[in-house]
Image (cartoon, rainbow, N blue to C red; front, top):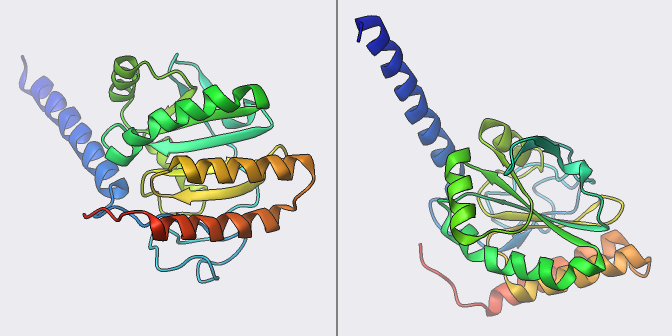
Length: 229
């Protein structure tokens, strides 16, 4: 192999290593993040509800940001193309242990609530080959969007520093009713989705639902055994 060819290969390998380190260092938490519901859409980070969680940094958008990423099957797809009345949009990565622990719950949510109009969409901010391999290993059966730098941009559009996992719960008007920072638990998911249903039915206003959800997540988090870093 010519010297110039060796140099080209070396540069490509170095670029891959730098990209991997950048994604991991940007996204991976130093310690498990505290469970938190992000502030109401449009509220500044210092508003009541932000707490001391450093992952809540900016304003949360009122509505689900639109973004397009590649799918597990290959062709790109926009998040806006999912038309179910309720969306659960989960940002994760294969190397994130809390993210992997959430997957059975997300599958259960889709199985139990899919007929009621709930769709789960995973957004994997990770290397495509790693996501494809992991999804095949576990038989992951809900839709996936996959991105590296473009995946980080999608995560960033939610107004939080992307410490994984985080999950957006969206109503039929594509309003963000809850943005859960940290690992999602079954009792939390049930409470949030029940209140999204009420918003969709018109029996509860979005801001009232957001406040009830925030209070309940804090109550449940206080009762849950704490993990160590």
